[in-house]
Structures are given as C-alpha cells and as structure tokens.
Image (cartoon, rainbow, N blue to C red; front, top):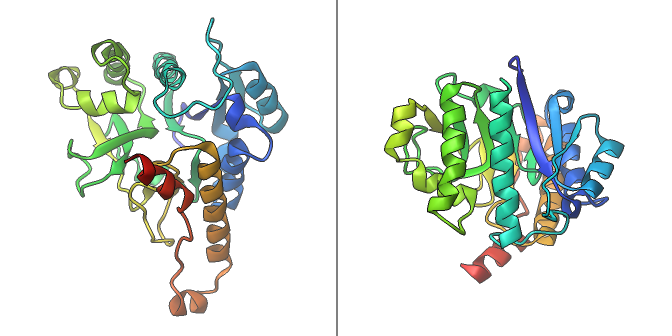
Length: 275
C-alpha cells in the first residue's frame, strides 16, 4: 500500500446498526482475496455519536466528525436535503485530509471489497473515480462518474480541485456532489489546475449500474443505482453469498459452470420504479 495513503469510509447511525451495512462492509474485507490487511489502513469517519460508539466497538480506527446543528444519524434518502448536507460535509472533510498531506482511497460502505484495488490506480492520475457508466476509455470525460469510490493523490492540484468542487455546490444548489462532479469535470478551471482525472473500468471497479460478471477479475462491487437501505442490504448479502460460492469452487467446477450473480434484484426494482 502506498505511503501516507489511507482508506476512508463514512458512517451514520442508520448504517452502523448491528447486522447492517458497516458489518457487511467489514465482512467483505475478510472474504476478499488478500484484503484483510487493508483493515489496518481503514479510517471510519462517524457522522454522529451513535455511529462513533458502534465504530469503536468493532474497529480500531474511528474518527468522529461533528457538524453543529445537523443530525446525520437517521437513514438519509438519496438526494433529500439531509442527504445532500451529509455528502457535502464529506467533500469538505476529504479536502482537509489532502491538506494534511495524506492521499486517500475513499469507499462508500455499500461497496464490497473482493480484491486489492491499488494495482488498478493509474500512476498518472491525480484523481481516479469509479463510474456509473464506463464507456471504454479511462481518460474520457463522457464516463459517468460515481464519487462513492475515489482515489485522490495529495498535491496542490487535488486540493484546489476539492475546494472548487465544494464551492460549486453554490452554483448548482440542491444537487448531489456526484452530479456536480459530472457538471464540472469539463470546466476550464480543472485544466488551469493541471488536474489529471481518470476513471476506473467497471469490469474491475463495478457496481449495480453496470455490472461486471467476471468473477475472476472483479475487485469491488458497489450497490449503486439503488434506493433504500434494506434493498441494498438484501442484494449485497446475496452478492457475498455468491462470492463465497465462487471461492469454494474448484478449477474443474469453474470450467463446467460459469459463476453468475443472483443479485441485484431488490435494487433494480427500486431503481426502475423511480426512473
């Protein structure tokens, strides 16, 4: 793992409840291939007191990020006002991490880790971000970014970018940080910063929006394109079951029966009802 690099996720009470999202997230590190070691480098940023209390009971590295006058504890519906405030608080915090000289790999807690993602980070990228839709070229700005899985290298260019990204919420009021990212990724300001932006291939850094079925190379799986905590939990639990089944297969079993995902189902139903 690169020096002065930390893995970061954020957590609120709704995702910290026992046998819910944070437990699945941590479990995936134990089920992945040589991924348990990353737990020593994982910082869980708790957004409320209850999630912090739960964090320190299950993990070694926890940080309580307090925001005066805001309650981040309950389940935040996608794009609701509280959800947006929570997401933008995250962006501001990540800028502070960069200013302290630490590079980071940010991962939403609804992402399952199956393999080491660091070999897939380009040495030429200041920022490399996952995609809802990947169109085949890592440098193409036509790729649809998803900020739930993002690597940022600590330098002046990324610090300036995070400041610009955070301020852009005033230009696009009521918009999710991810939607704002997709708005500003073509801005001239990014060229002036000299920012080198790249995108992860969904064959490896995958998600429900554009599912990779190649168990032999899959690195992470994100419960994106999904509404509702319970739907995410149902499908991710099934994903872990499918992954464990794959890991138990012998080479001859794999030759005679290609493994497939039994999920997502609940998430696709929830997403299609809205779109």
